[in-house]
Length: 108
Image (cartoon, rainbow, N blue to C red; front, top):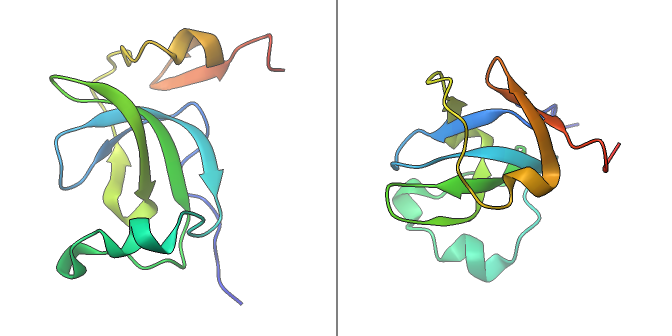
């Protein structure tokens, strides 16, 4: 049996290991749950294994805001303490405390 316990949690701010973007986690899949086409579009030399948690992020880089789907192996904790500026953060989350957003009271 696979151990697919998530290392990160909803509301946590994370950063990509390889690429220059960060974001707040809003959903977690215990293992890969996107399309085969999406997975195959990743270059083989950096393609992550499917048997691990995958995270949906409200992501940002220096130029854009978007949704990212990232494997656990490619995430690290963001230690900047800075809020995520993605325009959808306020619709899902409340206060930011110690690098983690609280779920909005409307979602609890």
